[in-house]
Length: 147
Image 1 (spheres, rainbow, N blue to C red):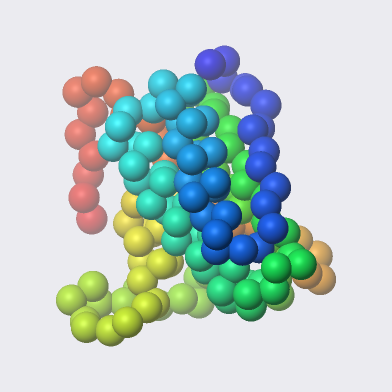
Image 2 (cartoon, one colour):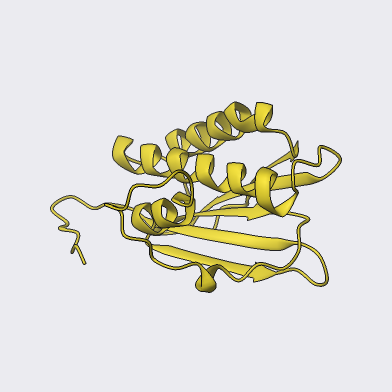
């Protein structure tokens, strides 16, 4: 793909039954862009967490709300954005939980942070947020620093 490709966009009703559609969309766009299998798997898992959180928390299981999934390739990155219709949300206020702590739920943001190279959430006016995730393309011989 060219360095500045247009966004591929999918709009869905806020319904957990649409989760498989969002996952398939992200996987297909990643494959079309030539991403490696590991990066596609990370993007699909991050999509699962993002869509689940939007439906359950931002939209509070309100099927009348909609969410939009946007994918875009740039020269060395894959950008994934989720636009919701919920109350403004400050993702930086979500604590980094101890992964060894036994508890149900509360791991979605932790997983997105672990899987992606960048994670931000910006309000879109009075209602709505844009959750933006960036995955850098792996290059041959590249070593990713853990930390």
